[in-house]
Amino acid sequence: MSEDFGNTYVVLTDEEGNEKEFEHIDTVGYNGETYMAFIPAGIEVGEEAEVVILKVTEEDGEEILLSVDDDEEADRVFELVMNDVDAMFDDAEEDDPTDGDEPGEEN
Image (tube, rainbow, N blue to C red; front, top):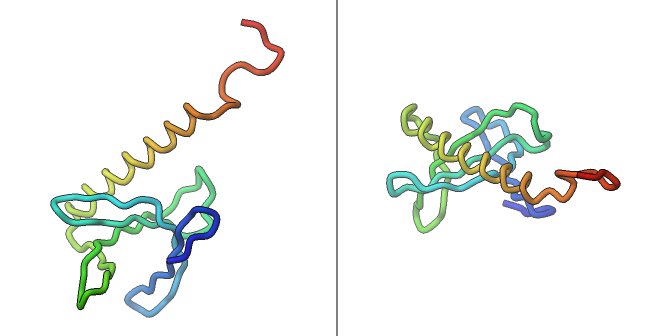
């Protein structure tokens, strides 16, 4: 994974051997396992994107990412990721210095 401008990007290869760059958006724990969530690189804020959830496992001392085949497991992890993403956006809105009164306006 590479970190450019504070974001982490990774190239993932699908089952057919196609490579595509993704941006890491969150890491969550669920039922004692670790999962990472990614969206396609270059997605703009507010633009709909497919979220890819992968399970982190270790094989021969190396960390690898595996697809999540169980729909219930994937749905639950997706909910956790979206809760984190919503919380990040809520925090960003609260910290936004342009939010609120415009300069020159009186209350």
